[in-house]
Length: 179
Image (cartoon, rainbow, N blue to C red; front, side, top):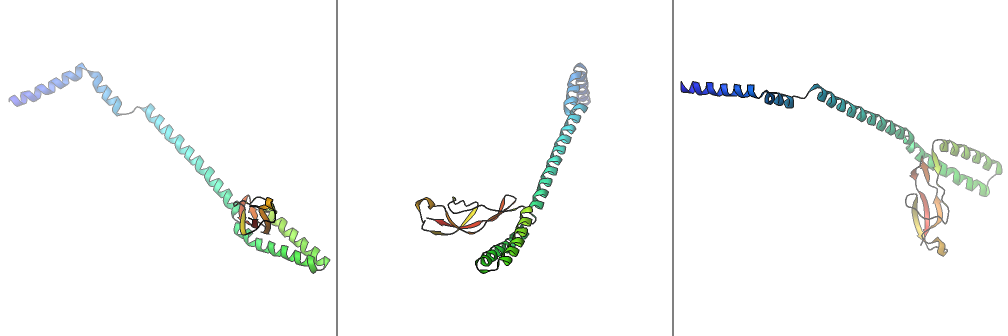
């Protein structure tokens, strides 16, 4: 029976403590469960972050799509460079020992072809003898002793024209450098 009295006394003591200090119970409830304003702020923050992330995704995919369309014809342009080189060689040969009418006809076709490629973003690199060698744009085929002191480390001759497609190098200019 004394056990029952002890249990009863403890529960009475706890009840008295709660009655004397009602703020203790309220404080525990407030810290345990966030109020509606905190929940609203948290959800608003989550929404703003998700919205910003989605906007970044849209911008990134639009940029990737533009780059894809811009460089989608790169393989075709690279294959057309061989035809462009053949036209240039043909023009040189016809100019040496050909008919003037043939030269004008081939030149007309060459210019038309070149213009169509340039409309699509293809541009020849402007490289000439005496320019500084730059590995970002030039490919050195060979080195020869420089004919003059000022051509050391510079381009002596251009073997093959380089091309860019929308400011991206698709074929390096093949050059001979002086040493």
